[in-house]
Amino acid sequence: MSGDPNGRRKEEIARMFDSIVERYEFLNHLFSFNRDRVWRKETVKLAFGRVLDIACGSGEMVELLLRNPAVEYVVGLDLSWQMLDYARRNRLFPRSAYVMGDGENLPFADESFDSITVAFGIRNFPDKLRSLREMHRVMRKGGRVLIVDMVGAEGLFRPLYDFYKGWVMPFVARFFTPSWEAYRYLSRSIDAFPPRGEFLAMMREAGFESVWYRDFTLGAATLFFGEKV
Ligand SMILES: C[S@@+](CC[C@H](N)C(=O)[O-])C[C@H]1O[C@@H](n2cnc3c(N)ncnc32)[C@H](O)[C@@H]1O
Image (cartoon, rainbow, N blue to C red; front, side, top):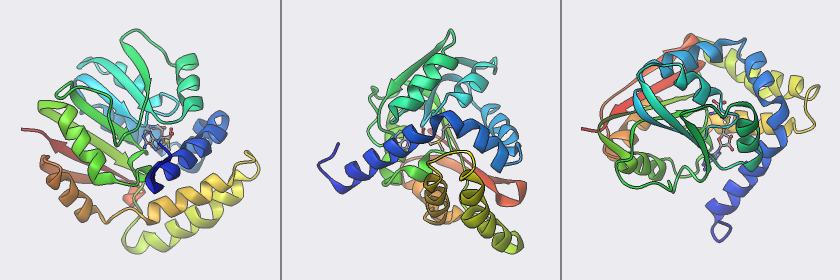
């Protein structure tokens, strides 16, 4: 993985997530005022069949997906060994499995899944188009991709949101984790995300159709949807 700059960046990202695993969920719920639970539930409702959850982290989405009766089974994939270890210890249920792997090079055969979810993960992928192409490859015809992430607020709410993620979050994180720098990275990764319309164009370029997005909580998070026809 370390031969190219993207590979090195991914190793650093994996190490960073390794370092925050124990406090990760608590801080997510704290910083989103628990709204992330609602955003996740809205996303999970749209999944069906055999599901791949990319960047599964501690497995919160895997657990929610399994509660949806339309879901057959869920495979969680992540780059961070510590996150996967946490998920396996806390969220290994019947009809679920965890795999270590890279969201830009999916270790699955073509047309293996009906739905693909990525919650708060794609922001970290250096080559988002490549990852979307991989999702399209491993998805069956009639399948759907559901990507939910924090991609930056728009309009009047934006200055407040920028202050919150750029200053309040890293400051508060100091009290809970020695790896509070990770929360500065979070802010930068949100800033680096392409505008919503551009990301939809990227989804189309990767082969997805009927693409749309929906903002949650004044744009604090956004759900992107696409189908493979
Ligand atoms: C913010 S966490 C989100 C975790 C989980 N999906 C959730 O909803 O809480 C981002 C996750 O993406 C993973 N990740 C980052 N880059 C990745 C990549 N290239 N391939 C797979 N996972 C990656 C990290 O290890 C981390 O667990």
